[in-house]
Figure 1: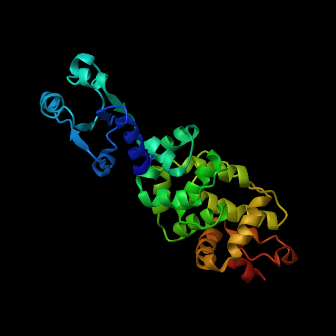
Figure 2: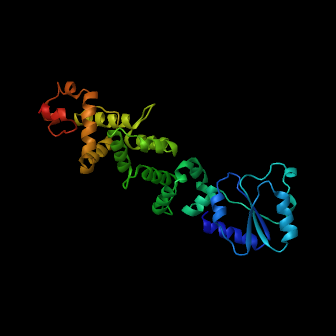
Figure 3: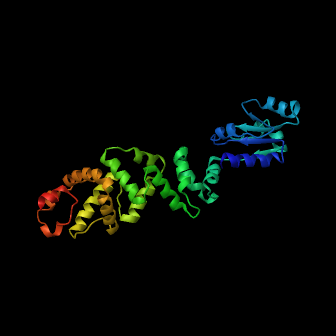
Length: 288
């Protein structure tokens, strides 16, 4: 629900009521309250001054329209709500951050749980606007999460771009993207996608472990051996490696992983013709 939606919703309430109450139960809409402007409507915030508010709206200004906002939930006990009689005689406007987001993104209520599960993502106005720009009417929950993943990694591609961004961060010993994915509750979605697409399975998934496994599996498959990852991983590796934008990252990780995997020893019993076209590690060039 954008500011426009809030304004329209309030206008509809004021067509029927002189006084409208707005309880911000989750304390997340004060900014929206501050920004909304309605002709001929006076805004009041409840701040432990219920009696003075009642006197003003009923006695001092009995013809004036009022929007009465509380930065918090409605009192649980009816006896604690000193404005209850006024409220029952008039209207209550209901709006939540989730409803605002759904309306702003053009999504129906079926997406409410998904948005709530990734609340941190939407704390950034830029991320929200970037997501809005690439969402399509036919997108389902899977597509929504995937586009959130793309935005968090700063990728302008598909899953390969996401992985490329994570590998680049890993090569430079950074973890800003990974921490953001964790805060936005997108890590599990990432690992699920890597499992579905490339067969990556482990009890403790990480970008470092996936990168290492990708190098290892593609090397083994190039030699005709058995690997943990599937053939789609080979396609991923080849495209990523051959993209000139990834050359520095590839060289950094290749050099590191050839030592971890002890490629020099692995090549001892390998016939040269089997690896003549394999360029995964510098050690292979020396082998030739």
